[in-house]
Length: 171
Image 1 (cartoon, one colour):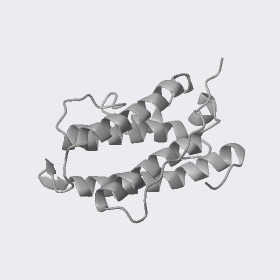
Image 2 (cartoon, one colour):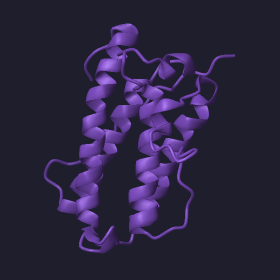
Image 3 (cartoon, rainbow, N blue to C red):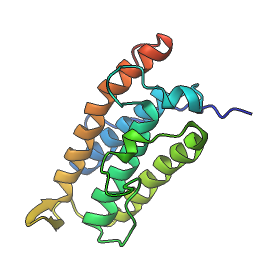
Image 4 (cartoon, one colour):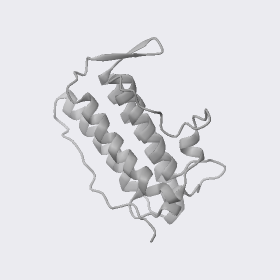
C-alpha cells in the first residue's frame, strides 16, 4: 500500500492577540500550511524534483524544516543534546539531496513531532530569554521571527513544487 500525506486543518491565530500568542499563531499557520501543501500526495510525489535543475522536493522541505525546528528550538535555545537530523557524511544538504519516498510517512511524522517538541521546549520561556550561538545572542522572540520567515520562504518553494506536480495552486 502506498502512503499518502493526510489532509490537515490549517491552524491560525488571532490578529489582535498579544505578542507571544501572535508569534505562536503565525508559526503554527506556517507549519500547517506546509503540511497542507503536501496533503493528498504519495511518498513518490513528495520526493519528486519537479523544478530542475533544483534538488528541491516537498519531502526535502519537510525534512529540512524538521531539522531547523530541532536545531533552533531544542538544540540552540533549550540546550538539549540531540542528534542532527539528516546530516550524513558531513553534508548539510542531505535533507534536500536524499529524500526517499519509502520513508515519506516517517519524515512527515518527524516534522510533526519536532514541532510538538519545539513548542514544549519553549513553553515556559519568555520571549526575552536568550541563547548564544556562534558568539551571537538570540532571543526567543528572534527565533520565532526566524522560523516564521524560514517557513514563509520555503512555502514559496512548496507552491511551485506542488503546482508542477499536479497543477494545484493557492491556499
